[in-house]
Amino acid sequence: MVQVLKQYPDESINVNAGPVRNFTGSYEQMLEDIIDTMKAHNLDSLSAIEIGYAYQLMVIREHNKYIPYANPRVITQKNPFDSTEKTSYFHNIPIMVKRYQTLSIVYDDRKGNMQTKQINDPEEAATFLRTLDYLFNTTLIDRIPPHQREQAIKALAGKGHMPDTSDAFCPPESKKVYFVSVADKLLFFMFISLLLPLFSISKSTLEGWYTFDKIAFPIVIILMIGFFFYAQYEAKKYKQCSSCQVGNNIGVMVKRVVAASAFAIGAYLFVNPN
Image (cartoon, rainbow, N blue to C red):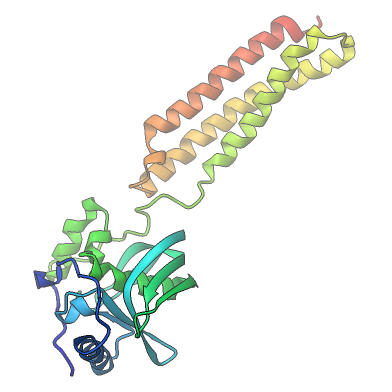
């Protein structure tokens, strides 16, 4: 039987669902109601919570088949990405949230048998996670960073636009690490040059190493300046990224500038053959 879909701001959706233990009788009726409601509203997925059943049951339409997932759990999740999503609960207004593309999940099938599944598709993973959220008292609004949540609530009330949350999270891999990586390699060889006077090294070899030290020192300084300005750019773009904060970036920069200065002075005193 087709049921009424809960829609924002109906707060009765905010309950923790209980596990499905009996896979006969009322369970079959509940499952039939979910599928009938999905067909009536042309939905790709639906949780039991969204039609008033407080059970850990959800259905996803896969290749025109309605697949039930009872007591679903995510075991591992990797490869984060920004996903723009719509749900009937939020009146199909697009909201951007953070999801994971690669999932390892467990669940009970229609007969109550435990199954495992691997998902490595962004759309499929987003659909699964979005529907799963409702079973654990979570909605799309809860996935938005706190400083943007109030704006989103106003937008849902028809008083504004949805905030752009695409830059709310840390990048999977920050490009500023390349500045640090090159600087660290140069610092390593500057340190090695300080050890050369301990061995029987020719004057011409020492001159070559000293020339390297004189070139490497300003390059490290330039790299750290570039690192700092790029880090400032990321700090503004990725507002929720703790590793992008100014204090962390200054610490990274200062340590390498101090090390480069110390190695440069040491090279002048001990490696300089003149």
